[in-house]
Image (cartoon, rainbow, N blue to C red):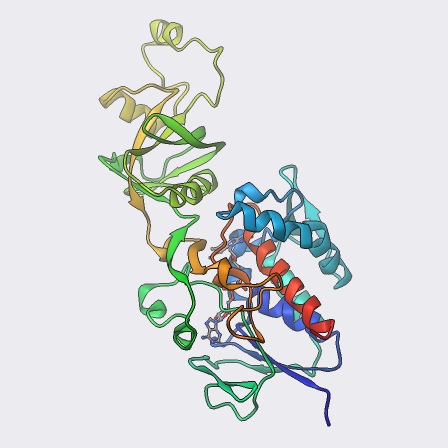
Length: 374
Ligand SMILES: Cc1cc2nc3c(=O)[nH]c(=O)nc-3n(C[C@H](O)[C@H](O)[C@H](O)COP(=O)(O)OP(=O)(O)OC[C@H]3O[C@@H](n4cnc5c(N)ncnc54)[C@H](O)[C@@H]3O)c2cc1C
């Protein structure tokens, strides 16, 4: 009797590629990687503006949407573990002064190349193969009408973040077989549309201390660059605010408060105005133009949130399979030998390497479990 284990990995993104590498370390595993697109690691390549901020050396549980889950998760796998794994694969990395880890080439393709180079040639790679159906056949699983049956299936299909509407209507359709608690994908790490917006600000950029507030209460605050769009705002600091905005049960009366003095309380703005009758030496031209039409508090420029931009503009989605469906090894509690990793799980974090870390770390946990013969 053969003691080979046939394993299907569905999705060749960050999580799927990491899984393929880790699982190919055990020669008992017969691996099949299904990818619907012609290319692998597409989102990983798009990450970090093409530089791929792959990890953060100081991952904090409170920067994710589910703190209790992440607190447990981080005890099982740390950023250090994943950094070591990537280093062992031959990836040289650089860390910036905000603890963000990049490939030292600052080129996302390098990460994909390293992962691919480490995946055994024995892995059967099925590109342009969209998994639409997964069903049990006795103690194994069938994928579409694929000729082989699988002992284990790992779902690593991510979320529709960044996709145009036409491409996402059938996303993760194969989940219909499984009766699981899950929530619809909604955009996270995304810009905001602003009420009564001054369109002429489009193209303006400014460094500010930004607070996401609701009913005069600060929910989240960070410094960074705000990028003004045609009908709203974006930039990393804004994307991070959107992650916290998404976690609010009620979205009413939410606004962004921009401190354009960046927390500098000592500068006397009244004195400045008395002397110069203008803020053109403090504000970028378009903001100054707006100020001249409709004066505002430079330490509390309020922008009332209409909503977020569409999923197409988002870096990640909130929503997906509820963590209550998963055991400690990310196996579905109701369906033995089906595992879930990465963004398909209802976990999302802020910018700074949090989401790729989660995708790799899930893959690490599942691979450890399967390689240990469980
Ligand atoms: C523009 C952008 C920038 C980002 N920048 C960063 C960053 O700098 N740092 C960071 O941490 N995160 C970043 N992210 C988020 C990060 O890329 C994702 O969280 C991460 O890639 C998720 O990994 P995953 O493996 O779960 O899913 P994915 O990487 O999305 O992989 C899923 C794969 O499954 C395939 N697939 C889907 N359905 C099927 C199916 N039915 N059958 C077969 N294959 C299927 C998809 O084609 C895809 O290849 C960014 C995202 C975007 C869009």
